[in-house]
Image 1 (cartoon, rainbow, N blue to C red):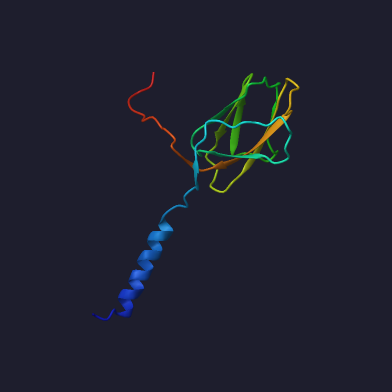
Image 2: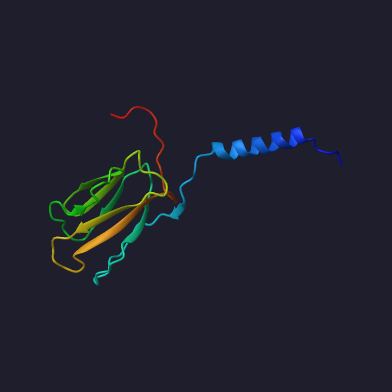
Amino acid sequence: MLPISPGALLSLVLFTGAAGAAEPPRAPACIATTRLDLLAEPTRQAREVCISADMPTTFDFDSLLPAGAVELPPDTRSVGVAQGDDFVTVNPNRGFLPGERVKITVRFADGAAPATASFWKEPCEPQGAVRPPLSGKRS
């Protein structure tokens, strides 16, 4: 076996360290889900929901939402929301970083339990997500 010179060893360590440092941190993988069931009993714990940092996520409810039903913390700038009669779409902004969490609370109009539902949004790469390829011009 040939001895390794200190210069070669130092080069190897620097090269592997630089290669590891060049990779951006990856978002944790989570399993994509298409359905969350809300229980009639109110719970103080918000549901964890992984969303893609570059794709909108829509929540459809079987109950009507009053105007202004979506509540975000006052300092939230990393997600935008759009509300319809019975749905909420969460659209992450470019500043939605891995490890960041945003709590979103939705109030319902029908008076049935639960009166509200809260969700923690966390950016990640969902497993099983389907992204159609973009090609050509859109009309």
